[in-house]
Structure formats: C-alpha cells, structure tokens
Image (cartoon, rainbow, N blue to C red):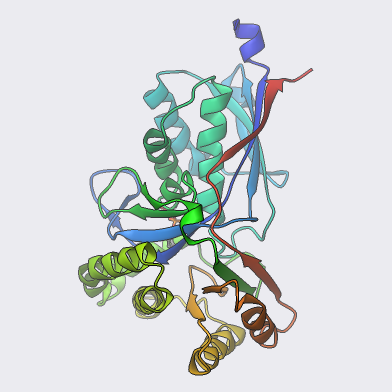
Length: 330
Ligand code: DP6
C-alpha cells in the first residue's frame, strides 16, 4: 500500500463496555494506569462505542471527536504516544466516535472508547495485534479498557500491564445485567479524579487495597462455577468498599441519588423473595444488577418502579471488539 492510499485508509469498528464485578479503583506507581487492585469484569452485550478512524498525513489534522464534540487532546496524548512507540509507526489519526448509551454517566464508556480506539487505530495501520498487546495499548488510554478488548469474563490483575479472559461469553449465557439508568447526565467528577482523590485522602484506601484480592478470587471462582449467589456477595462487598473510600475522601465524593438507594432496596426485597438480583455500581449513580434470563423481566419491572423517568436496559455477556468495515474513503 503506498503512502497516498494509507492516508485515506478508514476503519470503522465497535467495542462494548467492561462492567467491573470486582473493581479496579486506584493505581500503582511505575506505569500508566497500572491497577492497584485486581478487577474481575464482564463485557456487556448490546451497548457499543462505534469508532471511525482515518489516517491523516499531519499532526494538524489529528483529532478525536465524540458525538461530534472535539475532545481535549491532552486526555488522548499518552494513548497515541504509546501507540506510536509500540507499533514503531509515526501515524496521525482523525477519530469520530459515538456511543449507543449515555456517555460519561458511569456506564464504563471509557472502557469501550479506548478498546475501540486501540482496535481501530491498529487496524487502520494494517496491523492485527494479539489481544494481549491490544489490551496493553488500550490500558494506557483507560485502565478498564484493558479488559474491554476481550469478550466474556475478564481479569485485570493488580500491577498487570494487560488483562486476560477467564471465560468466553458463552460460558454463562443466561446471565443478565439489568441496568437502572437513574440519571443519564454526565457525572460531576470523573472516575479518574475520584479514584486519585480517594487514594490520596481516604483513611480506608489501604484497607480497600488489602482486602480486594480475596474478593477478586471469590468472584472468579463464582464465575467459573456460574454461582450467582457467591458472585453477588463478592460483588456487593467490592462496590460498597470502593464507595467507602469515596464517601470518606476529602472533599467527599457522593455519586448516589435517592433513586440509587431505592433501587438498592428493591434488590434487597427481590433477594428476600428468592429472586437473584445482586447490584453493583461504578463512578456514577446508575445501578447494575446481575440476575438470570429467567428472572430478568421481574427484576426489570421491579427496578423500573424506582427509577422515575429513568431507563432500564437488559443486557448479557457480550463479545470483544469487532470490525465493521475498512476501506479507502472516496
Ligand atoms: C469504577 O478505567 O475509567 O469503573 O484508568 O483512570 O481511565 P482510568 O479509570 P477508569 O476507571 C474505572 C473505574 C470503575 C471500576 C472498573 O471499571 O473497574
């Protein structure tokens, strides 16, 4: 392929968000986005970031737009610098990205965004890199994106450069995630800032780090045995301990809304009635509830009574990034 053709090469691809069941919250020194805790996650079906990557011939044309809005180049420069160094290719890109779900609202949009970007940029350069390398590239954009380059169930170990798949999406085909979107607006503080404030100021941060490996091991075992009760109880401890570090940060970080608490209570009532409904949350007010296909309708109905005008989404375990099309733009 000659230089002229290369500069017009376009790749469109999609990636789905990685929902942490046991959380990555805090970073280790010695690298970019090296996680301080082991996280265990599921890549979600149906929700996608769709990204179009075009090779351009100069730095001046290099840009990233999300839903048409030009993004701050500083947020992306560690990712692109590392990509160029890793692939040993001095390339510039014009990127347009859209999400099929609310952006920046605590639905893990940065995980799918950087997984799609890593996938799209490598493909636009005509390179098909192994998933482990793609995971390392995506991690530099966002820690959680290291997991989203795989479908199914994943682990990103504390201190690891890359995530790995622990089970494919078919492993637990009747698992469902019911998402209660109680507020689709952007969050008040980014997960990155909230994470560093928690690490710097919460007296419980050390306990969080020390106790998280055990939760990760419990969750991984539970996934391998498709044991929703065991997974649910490890998941619940993980998000509540993570929020403990946020509530006790200075100044405190409180993403929760009244509807958030109402949904958590609804999950308690469902479990009391023998229905599996185990919640987790990320950096935002939304509540994600794991259940099984058999119960997902009942769970969705119960949660919708608590979310006011909020949306309810029902998804399952999904696939890794996919290529939609690649070719020359005319
Ligand atoms: C609460 O991956 O967005 O969703 O590495 O700074 O970009 P950076 O953080 P990010 O944080 C994810 C935090 C979380 C938990 C998780 O996904 O494990």
